[in-house]
Image 1 (cartoon, rainbow, N blue to C red):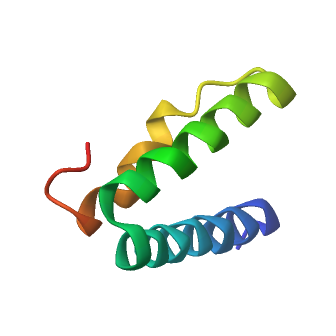
Image 2 (cartoon, rainbow, N blue to C red):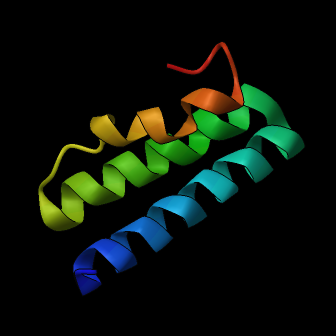
Length: 65
């Protein structure tokens, strides 16, 4: 398997785990706050849009979109 995909998949899995931990500890507000920080950092540091990655947390809450 391509090393990039393996690394990407591992990071995606960890991001999903973090989302679950955030939701368990602080609910939807915690997820929104963290994603805002992530989104801002991605835009500022690498000039990319982070919105497509919101879907990684879709299965955590029916309110998350």
